[in-house]
Image 1: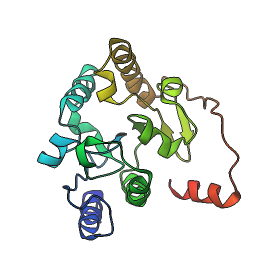
Image 2: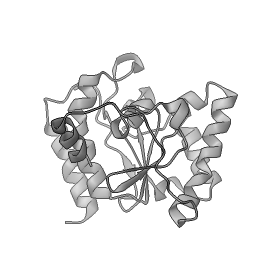
Image 3: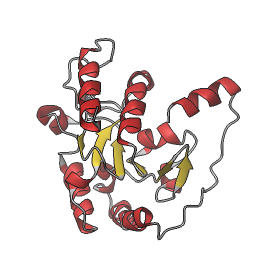
Image 4: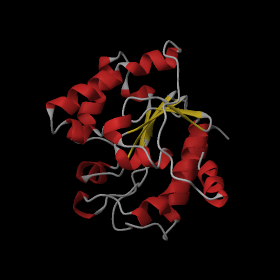
Length: 208
């Protein structure tokens, strides 16, 4: 099967899975190039995403699309999705149990696409890969997590709330072409890790 077919099958599986939380909202699976080198992952859909069934189409999405264009790329070249694929009520933060429920599907989505670089947008997406990282400290740093390069960034919605964060968001974006081309050496920065049991470590590895 092609990647496109595998992703379509996964989406249908999610639609049929009535155990997933937030069933009252529309499933927003993700969109873009299934062979993308760069995968952007947010936390959950918002009002506009729920209405249109597409990820990042509100004001934050406009900023994301603008920044993708600013480095000479097109939105259609990358893949964009969220961890939680249905909108939480009133755009609240996703709950831990909601994130846990959707995690296995995200792991399979990542495995199918097989990107070179994963860009988690905001702390919820970042903590999927780096549980002990802090977005203010670690955004823009390049980590190696399993077989993937992971570069956390501020969420576009956060960037819209302040000039300082917006400037950092735009500056970090300029690194992406250099990472893809191999011009930037990937050095795994130190992140304070809490001691995990062997069972927890095995679970973490299985996500990737």
